[in-house]
Amino acid sequence: MEVKIGIQNASRELVLDMDQPGDEVEKAVGAAIDKGMLSLTDSKGRRVIVPADKLAYVEIGSPSIGQVGFRS
View 1 (cartoon, rainbow, N blue to C red):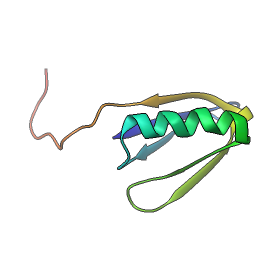
View 2: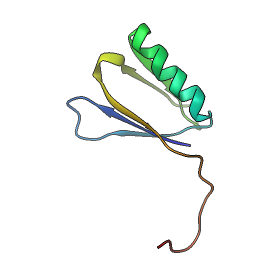
View 3: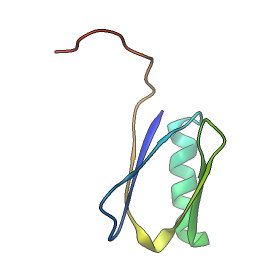
View 4: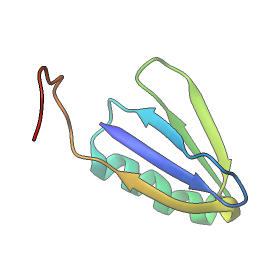
């Protein structure tokens, strides 16, 4: 699942490939508001920590299976 995180005053967004279901990511984002930081681990084991007050948005994509070919 692809998760995009927008950060205030940053020109690029963070894009993570997650193994966790979208519901778990959503709960982690909600808990981050209380804790003061968002901490996520991607499918390769890399951890990303973002201060909750700097979050602009979090876009949680649908699970995707590798696609081959052209799409219209």
